Amino acid sequence: MKNESFRNWSVVGGIIRRNSDVLLVANRRKDTLKDGGRDVIDWSPPGGVVDQGEGELEALEREVYEETGIRVSTWSEFIYGVDVNFQEHSMHLRVKVFEAIEWNGSIVVNDPDGIVEDAEFFSKEDCEIRLKESPVWVREPFLAYLKNGITLEKSFSYEVASDDSGNLIVKRNQ
Image (cartoon, rainbow, N blue to C red; front, side, top):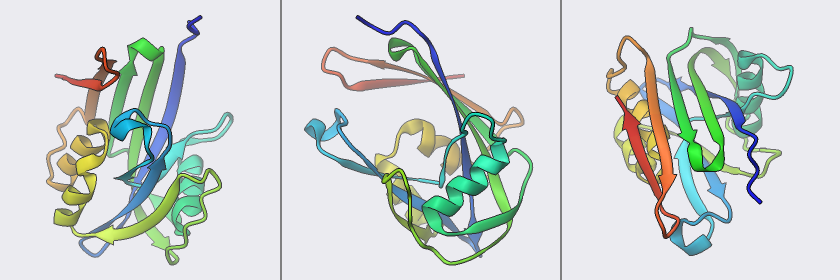
């Protein structure tokens, strides 16, 4: 029987720059339908789920440190947001993205969730290459930001469904 309770996920993402390069993390996704159920690696800015009772920036500082070893002391104001509605799975994902203003440390991956397995700074061009296999709701907003293409609304919205074969069909809401 399908679980009818709707799950809302609050997620934060961090943009961290070193000169003109930007930090991305490699995420190992297990048991996905993509590639016949084999593990898949996708790249994204660091970040993760806001835990119960945790503030957004508190969660972002924790996630960035766990995933990259970098400590951020100052974040920008809200940069952009992403809403993803997985209606068939009764799930909504709300992502808020901020940029690190002041940070220090060296890259050390020690993700307690075992998802992030690498972190590196990339040029804008290399970010585009790395993000080709990432979900469109990660890739489009991030690349728009890198190309100064964020609108005044600072918002991206997507609907996700599945076809008969289980492949994701993603539609961007305008």
